[in-house]
Each structure stands twice: as C-alpha cells, then as structure tokens.
Image (cartoon, rainbow, N blue to C red; front, top):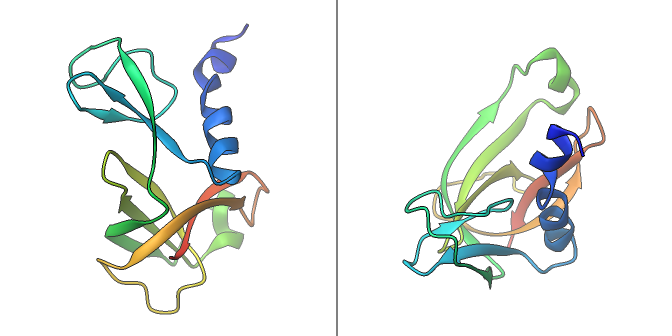
Length: 127
C-alpha cells in the first residue's frame, strides 16, 4: 500500500458515510473530538477512540467568500467556505444554496462534486 493510500485510508469511508447521511467523528476517553483517519487523539494521544454520530445540523462559526480562486478552482468561483461547529468537531466545506450566508446560521452537511474537478466536496446547505 502506498503512503498516499495509507493517508486516505478511513477518509474516503468517512466521506461516503456523510454522503449516506451517517456523519460521524471520533471521541477519545478524555472527551476530545477528531475526524478520520485517526488512530490516536491529536489532543492527548489516547488510542481509545469511539465512533460518535454527528447531529443532523451544525452552526456556522465563520465564513469567507472566495472571488478570485487559484487556476485549479477558477470555475468554482465565487464560492463561500465555512467552518461549521457540530459539537464534538468542526468541519470545513462550501456553503451552497444560501443567498446571504451569515455566522450563526444552522446548516446540514453533505457531499457534492467540485465544479472544476468533479472531486467529492463537503457542502453545507440550510438545515
């Protein structure tokens, strides 16, 4: 198995779980949350990680709109990127289907395609 395959191991399954409406994160015995792929808690090093379901929606902590993107993502622009708090963890993705996005709004998470590359992308839509 190549190093990139080892790095992605667990991540692709996690994205598929979100796409299936079964978003989750890991929680260590000390209550720290983390996202796959993980074998140890990044906060305390605990190896006792339990899978926890994420709530159906989270709250936008912060956001920014990209008007001038790198050439690789030029066809995506303009787009809005947000960090959303789901309690145990915070996720980063694009806001879609929201005319006037704002901090504090409730959104759900899903998976859609990036306009430019067709790759899987975490997307937040109104909850």
